[in-house]
Image (cartoon, rainbow, N blue to C red; front, top):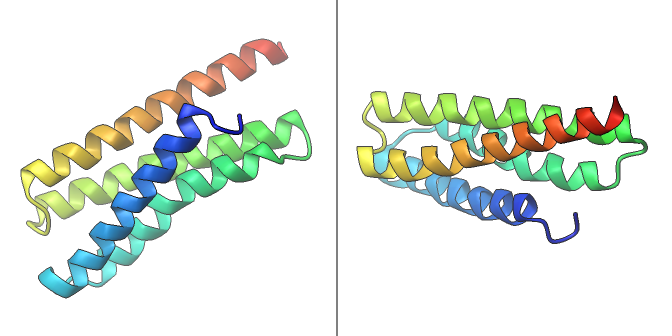
Length: 118
């Protein structure tokens, strides 16, 4: 999984989330939601990387499950930012599509891993 698509996409998504979290306080004077989304948005890729060195297959699966939860939480924060007017529809759609793609990839990976384990 060293250069997997999931690893690369989660890293690039984290970069976009960091840029968003820099924009929100400086341009929109928003501080609380930006801290939440930077935490969950960056946790996705960090957990994927952490999973690579899991102590066992169960640990690997657990880290991917937590990454999936963080992706779902990030989707929530994106929706909240859009619905409160902190980001526009275009920015929301771009980030939400990337987040949704990560969720789908994580779900697919977890399904495959579970099938292999059974």
